[in-house]
Length: 308
Image (cartoon, rainbow, N blue to C red; front, side):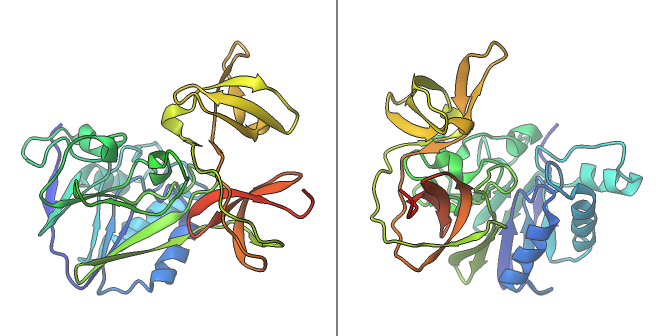
């Protein structure tokens, strides 16, 4: 099926959100945080309602928003047609475009195999993994979701939107629902300038002691998650990252095995320790006996606690 292209006009402030994944609470929280108003242009770049906690309510909310002439919505690779959808919802989803085209910008859920928008394959625009790491460059800025920004961070994990100006590519998927440390991002375009806001539901933590930044040589992502065991442990294990050959200590609970019980990979792992000052507040991703995995301004890393 050829990709459907919709031509739009960006006026005033443009708010771009992708990969809501049925997390209605975060979506509403983010809209409030950016002060979304009816005269804003709102672009929802696909993967709207599946995988998250409130798929039906999220779809209903997005469907209602779509009635505004200033709201434009793309179909993502996870826009599944299920038996519980109403006929009008099914028809609406099937009619969604795969590309939004505006002066100076192209918006697609996954990415583009070419800047020539004629006769592009729809699926190649909805599911286009690791788009920022492909060699293509564009004359217009191409804004995408689909592939969490975290997966592009091979040294220091971060969920904030990523701009590759030399290729004119922008990735905005904060990994909402997909990653424990994920967030929902709103990428804002206004008067030629870019900014963003994000929302998550991680609990706060008040840092007890100052810690200097260190590490940041390796972040294990979904694409390169294979590891080999060096020394197992109850809480933490030492492993060797297969692709880079580097060793690091990660929570044993983050490891998983294949059907035969053989270690096959890990869901995440980093050697990065956040720079923090006593008294500042960060967000807790996970807790362990002597440290927490935390997020500070979108960046994820370890903080040693006072008990260490």
